[in-house]
Image (cartoon, rainbow, N blue to C red; front, side, top):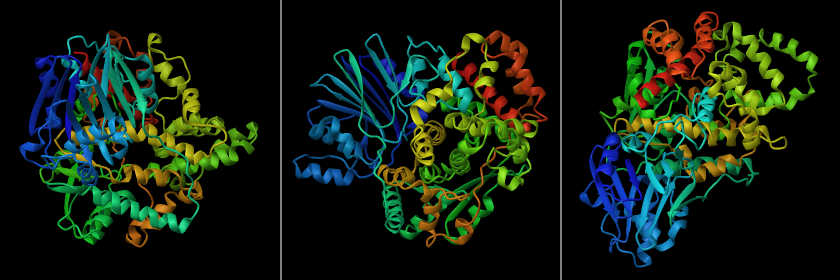
Length: 626
């Protein structure tokens, strides 16, 4: 894993400054290439072929093709054999050199050969062309600026801060999306001139023009045989995990008490891998939603070298560093434990495997069965009965509700409002999703902002248009929506940025694109049945995991931000969200911010999530606009 930067002109000083800005991504070495039409920079984290033969930027034999590459191509040895049979010669054992020769042989279509996570820039001096590529699932981020025929690109936005022409102007649209979801899943970024190369896409810069080309997307190819599909899940997972064990440096696994990370540990054990390091994180004195007991059980069961990190409220002091490394404001508080666990794990290993993707692929979230039931039966409920239903729903035992609307007991006075809003939203799928999972609803996001920052289009209408239709199965639509949005721009962004902050490579076996294609096309009834989620994955792994893991209820990793606002975060929150600071900045409505403080005690979780979202933005704003 590494960091890349570059642009389509010659500037030796700028390219070095941009690369140094992201040196944490590649602490082992740097490298540069310049000619009059291109500047390429690279920061290396040595994982495969640790020799000087792996230095980047790397070129072909005659120096006509250059590459700066970040990521891993897990099937590079297989591709290398095919290329050697066609006469290509290699001087290293790197996947980087394989990309170069694959491009020589197949041109742009070479990306279809690669199984892995990647972002890279290729300079073709014969064609006078720059090609940028990003992996199919968006595991690796890649940003670019295109202005006045100038193209700049980088693994992280902060590299652009070294470009004198860069202006950190805020995108009104992205700000509104951020408030709604706590992250930004758009191809635009919070800066109006910076874009993301979408997953599964190429960017071609040729003759003062750029074009975006999609080379991969999810497609419907339904599976019909249940028994065969279970076997294919196991074989796909084994193949994916085995490929991701490729490393010339120490490797470990992030282990929670959940199904996904336990499946990875089980398969690694099944493959005969010895001396496996596992890493778990939990809270100490506050004791919220710890899964450490389950992680210890698994570690003992499979005899791993287990390491635990216990954190508490004082560790929130790393929040400014977390925000800096995330580039855009992203208000997922679990970034803090992931950041700290990555720092801890880096003392022992250089590569970690983690379980991101399992819930999205196999319907693991409670919102899948809630929305499936709501949109199956909700249209049968007359409007006059919906208020009564919402009132009744409040008296359902909390063991059924606590994961439906994010720990409804802590929603306090807002619980009835959220239940009522969700029921009334039927059949609007995007609105229902937002009432279950959003931070600010449509009304609240406008109330929280000064009018000049209002994005007046309804976000739910745009989401419905892009992701939800009346005809398609709701679980299939949710699966695609989660994979394209939250998975990429919250979960994967968090893993990439928090691991790379410490020069640690994160790998995600559930997001092998062949495994994803298979899982996406499984019938929804095999994933979500009644109140049960992840059914087919649990049945598939039944013979490989102990019953204590397969039968346990899903737990959310809950970060106690509601407690932090009255403790470690109290003074900084009061400063960043003070009337004076809010007025001088001119983005947020101080009346709404004060209302959040006033209602924090009566609805602690609901308004602590909103305050956290506002606080993260304020801290980010001060860092990137100073």
